Length: 326
Ligand SMILES: NC(=O)C1=CN([C@@H]2O[C@H](COP(=O)(O)OP(=O)(O)OC[C@H]3O[C@@H](n4cnc5c(N)ncnc54)[C@H](OP(=O)(O)O)[C@@H]3O)[C@@H](O)[C@H]2O)C=CC1
Ligand SMILES: C[C@H]1O[C@H](OP(=O)(O)OP(=O)(O)OC[C@H]2O[C@@H](n3cnc4c(=O)[nH]c(N)nc43)[C@H](O)[C@@H]2O)[C@@H](O)[C@@H](O)C1=O
Image (tube, rainbow, N blue to C red):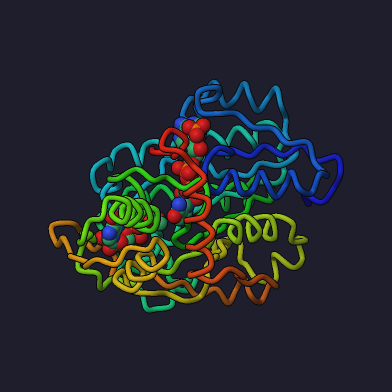
């Protein structure tokens, strides 16, 4: 789809980690006219503003990578913002895209849509089969609604709105806020600062026993465009009208302790790890079954150690003022 030369593509969330990576890959193709707005220019929770934007710009395709995003403590601390802002962004962008005649849309959900104790690895049909992880249930409900919004507009209006479910993502452009960020950027920053200050101990949140799967953001961007470009016959061969989402992951996971040890090695920290069990562990494990996507022809390329090395290299090029903290 986005290979066509005359496509006007709106990338919502283009300043974010994922939106930025998608924009870079689209720019490298040089084959499309790209439209983007910052949240200050266009607040996607504002229905009238989104309607006016879509009616004016009438993009040929939309990639929805804008959302209220954060780690386990941010989700647990701001549940109303996570459910409200994400529901509003999805409803406004998806409905106003339809109202403006946009035929093609891709939205990003999250692996947290699956039940806390879903059998591992979690296939797409595990959706709605059990209770969710409390620390991110509001966000997960919003993400599940996003899938069902796309499916409903496809079924009633014949749209081609697709959903990808990313695992935990990391890479250049991530959020490095000490409290609100995800685990990988948080540990990169904490270990880096500890090594710089000569500290001999770094605290890790939780018990270190949960397992997480990680995907480098450039792989996620490539997978997003891969799914967007799939011809209808291929896409419909692997999805159903009411089970349309596609898991995107690396296919392997590590414990938080193993992750911390890898980040320590990469940043040159040689001290001890301690575990702050006053912080939540969250879901014990959320490894996704990515066989639907691999049958479609895509697999992740960047291993975790290499991805962390690249992210740390990029981190070192940023001065404190440039580091995004959200
Ligand atoms: N990071 C991760 O580990 C994972 C992310 N995802 C999903 O991937 C997508 C991208 O995540 P990620 O890149 O990490 O997120 P970021 O926080 O890096 O970027 C989110 C972007 O959304 C934009 N945004 C937020 N609220 C609004 C608003 N009200 N109006 C307009 N724009 C808004 C921001 O724009 P601005 O900068 O202009 O304010 C920001 O650039 C999201 O849908 C997220 O749920 C899914 C699984 C894991
Ligand atoms: C992508 C995903 O991200 C979130 O779910 P999560 O994976 O639980 O998030 P997380 O990356 O914050 O934590 C993963 C694990 O890591 C441990 N941990 C250790 N030390 C730090 C630390 O310093 N910071 C953080 N954030 N976590 C830490 C932490 O205790 C937990 O056990 C939700 O947004 C969810 O909705 C979602 O979509």
